[in-house]
Length: 523
Image 1 (tube, helix red, strand yellow):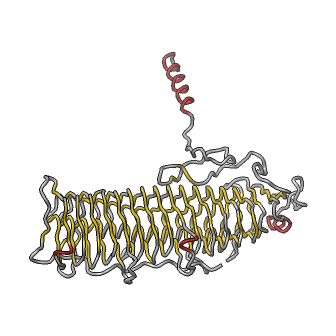
Image 2 (cartoon, rainbow, N blue to C red; image 1 turned 60 degrees about the vertical axis):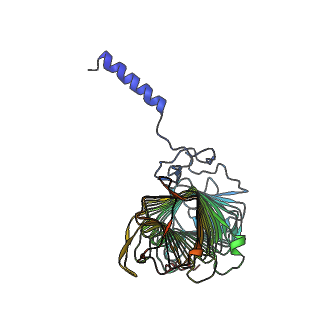
Image 3 (spheres, rainbow, N blue to C red; image 1 turned 180 degrees about the horizontal axis):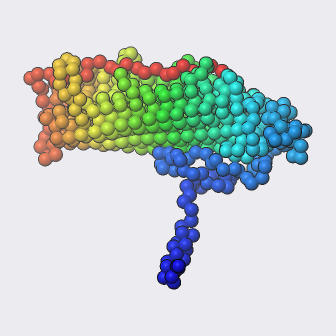
């Protein structure tokens, strides 16, 4: 029996719970008006915003057409006998509606399981909800194909089975929203020559290797352009997002557990690609990729407020970020950490790194090189926190134009070098093999062997603070005229002098092997 005191306590608890309300995940001011219910927050982006799909129904009716502009609507219900496509007499198959609908018209799909179909360009497909509408492809045939044309919305359905989940052929201004693509072979969403595509709140999972591709989550090729927001790409056997001779604006995305690269962006055949098809990534997270988290070859990319972490691999794989082929990269306000190999490696490319945290990576935090002697290695590092990496915080091999200004390079962990002699290295900076560098206003602390190792290179080192190493600055294999020291101090205020060791310190003696992209899936 509940006494009076207990009853009052229960009333107070109930009032408090009503005031708090059910836990919800805020989507921000730009939430889609077509989502009356908030998603359960299974996935979050780099800024901890809730992203992904809403599995509940879009409406309480059998067909959900609110918010769509349709010159005509054809209805499909797999429980129907097979009618004329009207609301009172729906088609029983998606293929029947697809055969009739033309650009500007819509197909409304009731809960059920449907075989795949091909839509004319400009036709909209409106499902009731991911958990209630499933479209399944067979063999190498996609679950859904959209032909050439302009416009159209595809929303609130699950695509599964077949060689691809969704294939868009030379479409423009198509909008994909609230889609789930699961358990497909080759490619989850394949976009070829399509422009002006918008993808929001889409989940692609379990894309596996098939006869035409290695299991790519999202593929953009041949001049395709897309704005992608609030997406989750997970558990692909190949690349999570592959952009080839195309451009993407990616924001608030989670790309995780990719079998090779998390994101690859490549311009390797079209000479106008780098200037005409620049890409951006912001507020996204690329995690647990195998081989490379973010791979850029010959393309122009700007990255902001993004996290690349826990890239896995061995034998030269496991790089957080890999830049090559004359690419242009701007990386700001981002994090690269816990890679099995380098945090960031750039070869023969131009990079700007500003206000980033690059931490706890194995075998170098940042590595810059010109492997093929292209004279295109140019790098500016400004106000970065580079900490706890193995062997060297920043290393450059034959890089003709390097500037490190501001920021901190600290606590580099020891790693054994076996060539030319066995020796443990833990250097804040290594400048090697004809590198030309400026180091200005940098704090170098806790790097056990040296703050800066200069070997057969040219450098101006000024206004920097050194502490915690066996040596502050070591110079070897070069002429004294190649080094200028000015205004550098130790933590106690003493002037820093260069040390020329009696026995050469062990150092890296060769550039890193380049990692290539996976094959591009065939149509």
